[in-house]
Image 1: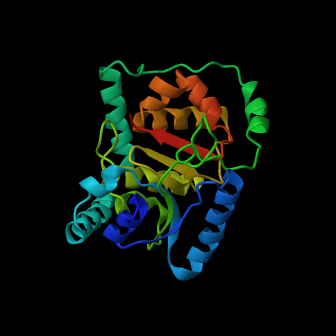
Image 2: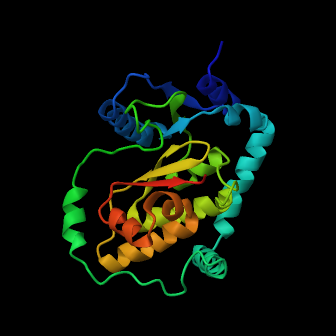
Length: 248
């Protein structure tokens, strides 16, 4: 009997590698970077996908899936990120999720601390590893997406438009914006999470604060359920090697 990952890969006609359930974070990440290099030559981008029942139960059949995917990959080009952030911010202000002029503290002593704190070179993948056991979650595959733009990956999995998550075309446009600014690359997707790996970082406290607001506008749960305050999120973003998003 085929497992979730096999069924889903067959459904969207995408090659993938199985992940051994006993694999540690170092082994898994090393394989990701190996495939990242291979993909540059062979025309694919690797991404970890946790395939929950939703993917197989709710995904359309291939022809309909392809039509929707192609439509998303065309529509994101029409999204104006600057306008999107502006409208979303106004919506949050009206809903009292955000003060019109949120004031961060003037204390920048934390910059050196967090810069050193985040010098750990390990890429921790919160979206595919169980925090309590330290083991990889069930039904995770390393998919080889036949794309040449890493920020388009959400479109291949029709990701977005649920709960308070932006629409798929909006998620792609935002991912493109962050890719161009921070070289942020989508490394993992589940049914409700997305994670980025990045090489560039905010250079100043102000830039980290602006990025924190952007990320809050994309995923309110970052503050409401994880960091409690925008201030704490901004500190985490300073020199962090990965960004984690969750839409509960």
